[in-house]
Image 1 (cartoon, rainbow, N blue to C red):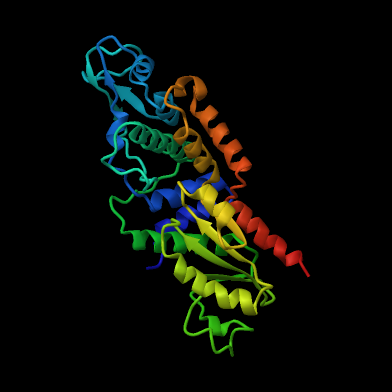
Image 2: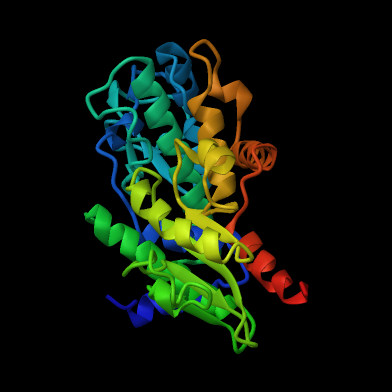
Length: 324
């Protein structure tokens, strides 16, 4: 299904802003978590948010949501600027809808697994919301997307982003039969397979083959079947991967069969990793007192883990034009 004019417009407006592109694509491919109620912290009467976090040994800092533009209310419906006026769960405005990021921790999980998953989901939501609000991005997050639909939408958004980011005359083509690629066109063992995405420069040179995977949980056998003939008969063509995988992001970067890996939102993955790994006895209030502190931690972690963004993918493809 082709992108709608509104979806295209969102990409066009933010081509030069990597974080905004991350926010747009992640928001359009939204996957709701069933554990968003973790944000409804139970307060005692006359208790502050900070006090409740310490008492309950939570793994996330409510200041992240507040820094992102959310407002907390106590169970009496009064804005929570200090101590709660009554006991009970707090509410947030706007409504908190977290991303489903970690398939390794089930919805029914409790204990430390629940703490890790919900805290990391709230961290990424805060980072995403901050970018959306500061850039003035308006988009409708889907209520439910089938995994296949989400993967196809991610691919189509990626293709549109690349087409509009690369030099004039370049082509970004999808599902090209491998037999249409020079060097593979008369090979008996290529069969009817198709490429995912091919990038061709303005001189007709095949610059790279790119695989788009929303997550790394999808069938890797199909991917390998595409790569075998390409790497055998066209070893001069680099094969890259673009993904939005969270829990396996570091592993993908280290162990992926592709030559290079690029991530939709490397800094947010870095923050997700940091919060996910916070020891049970360590307070997030001290480790990351603000959303900016969390963002800086994520950027540093992404750099250490060699996670590259889609802006780097564009730069690498552009620079290939200078390679003889």
